[in-house]
Image (cartoon, rainbow, N blue to C red; front, side):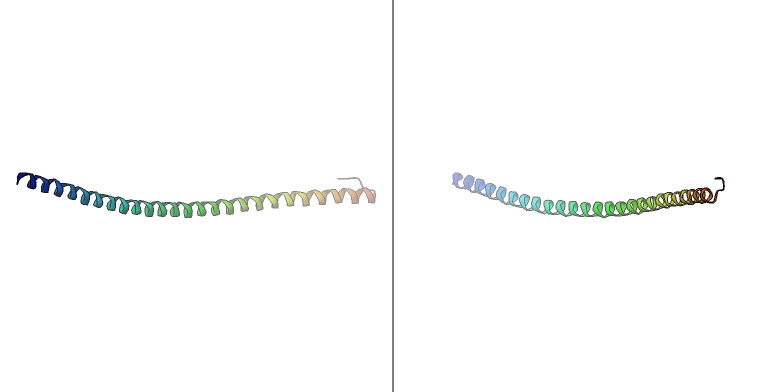
Length: 97
């Protein structure tokens, strides 16, 4: 009779260990799902932030390039006007100023 009771206790212990293991695996899967969701959200937020920063930097670079282009255009315009005046004075026989 003692052997039957001991065998029953061992069997109950083994079955409870299997049930506990199944709960642990299930919880691990749940935790992995939560971790994956968190990582996805984090990447999405970082992507949005990076896109905003890139857009801001691009806008700033465009403004800087536009100002530099305008400055160079004005300088070229003034040099052309000055050169044209010199040629006109030479053609008219006037000394260059």
